[in-house]
Length: 285
Length: 227
Image: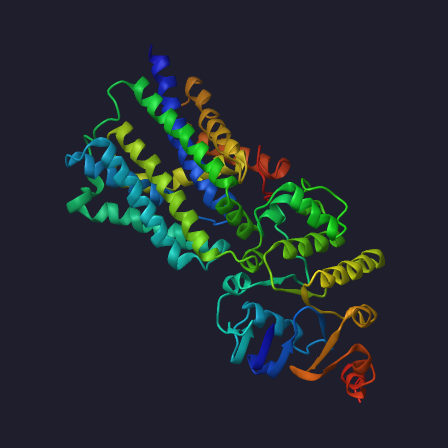
């Protein structure tokens, strides 16, 4: 029974992280925005939803609040950063994540700072139901991003990713497309964050940590840029690959670094032998 | 169609275009020629809104477009290709074309046939040869709803066969009523295709007229070879 519970737990995490990776892929893979602020949006979704829920707002309204707050944050971040490219955009958006972490730590009246927020209402009492809800939402998210990627808007986003000047000369308002792409991507990151908060039932400022960002980008690169299928496959691979280490009997002090070594090795192999990732449309080389 | 009125642009202390005025007429092929550094591409970029104008005005169909962003000028009917083809390299030929206009594969294939593109819609842009990228870029510019086609050195780097095909393509487009402006260094190509030639030197218009008139103008030879 414990093993089945463990598998259900893994399934829930895969669902939540699939939502995060597929939404990150829309910003990075489809639109070419090297956005390192995704964990910030994830945290905003988690905090807003958790705070609303613990103050008595109905669960699904609280989750919706988290999604909207993250989406708005995405739009607000995109407006001043839309003219930045590559490394500069990466640094600006990474700074946003750090700022959000700092706000969560220091705005103690609202967030309780490092003490975190305990007692967040669960999605459902039974983890099987949680798995079903998260699974359905992950599938819906993948479906939405697949459709958006094939839409006129999605094609314009891919065009500006490849050549912004040429996209402008085709009459595309690239500034508006970037803002739209960031807002949409951030809103789904917020959904992932809200689901995470209502599954774990406790969050603290460590949710804005760098570790999750590495995990998300690793899954993105392994699965491949601009591929919805790659997003969920990359997530499954990245989350399951280190799991056998648990059964070898390594001490926990070794497990964490070993997990990161596996990620690093996998990334190296992918970049060397399959620069597009498993299903990617964009060549990283 | 396009009116450029006393337009200037400088980069640092250097004037790329200075007090330049010209009219581009509708339904003909106009070539802009001149030695390197004459300001041809800068002028193109200003007309398209890629580069801002320091002074002067640009009108398209009588409407002042000075200072408008590039995408809004493009929406007013300016279609543009570049010296180096700007295709969306991670996308197929189909998606490159559909970025210009949403239409059926049959329509896309017709436009590709018009520019003598030899391959199919499913080929990725990154797999095309240099000449093929130029053809797809022209096809994409044609697909976009346009009043004027602006082609920056369409024959640069292409082999004689493609160059000959381009000549036929542009003449056919003119017959269909397209207004075409091109920057070109291949004089044989320019003289064989143009209805009007505008010669630029040192950021301004040196002379303009029919190919035969321009060819016989001593100032043109001096601009290219020096006195």
